[in-house]
Image 1: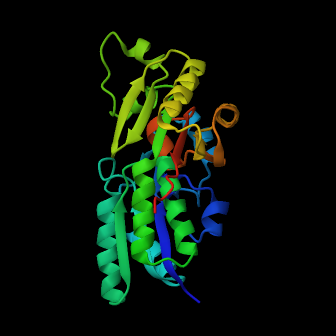
Image 2: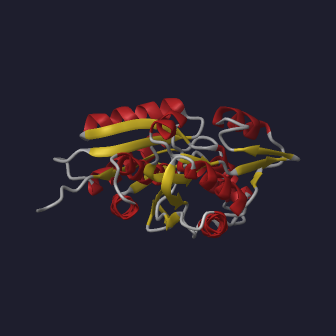
Length: 291
């Protein structure tokens, strides 16, 4: 019997394959271009392989841009398992994935007229987007309707926070996402900036000089957003920095009540812009419904 709702999201959501399979989440693999070769994120190339290649690359890789075709393929796969689809995309402020997902929905409706697809423009990113998608998938697994699953995604999305630190600004500068200020380049590259993603925007919230200081900042910022008496759901993410991620996970479990916590890799398509060494946490706290 088909499920009422199937969740579709991009590989940028950093959802471990075992979790995506368990929750019947269809992942749209975003393409990464290394020279003249194109790799589907998570299918043709693993994060370990990607970061190994990135460290040796003379020319930085790029992404293929947002195209409707991969979303259409994912919708077709989802249509075999469910009666409707909720697609959760990266924020439209970061990429064109939302528009591509909407275009693909229009194309599928020409093939299957009575099939319903809703697309959410997610206000968080990376593992934060993954938490939203998994919460929605858990609701769908209970047999909830599309409107109920959509509402669950919206509620969780409004409560998700993400804090992470970069090992270096080198890749953002090379990619043109951070202006290279003459005379300050070497100093800038030594920073370990802590950034947040919320409300569809990324903001720098601290500029420590060491990774240890950056991790302390992440824990401090988390504490400001958490009611210590209520458990949180956490995704610890990293880009080729598993030991740092494990250390951050230990600090989080030692400081907060965790309903669920897991470690996930920063996927290749995200690493194109940030490089290796990213570590951070996305989290949200459930709010008990008042009756």
